[in-house]
Length: 67
Image (spheres, rainbow, N blue to C red):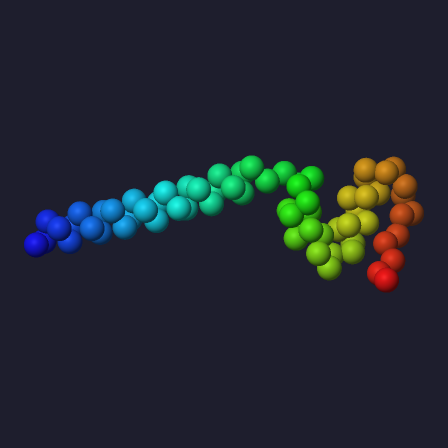
């Protein structure tokens, strides 16, 4: 009986570890240019959005206007 519980605990631990590794790989696969990642990164952060767009465009006085 104890051996069964021990094996079950190891299996659950391994399953959690595999799920964790899967999530980490998904995160590693994201690049800042991915739509989903960009949407979350810049959501409601106008100063960050302006900063990045100024770098990309070279427009030093670029301003974002919320509509």
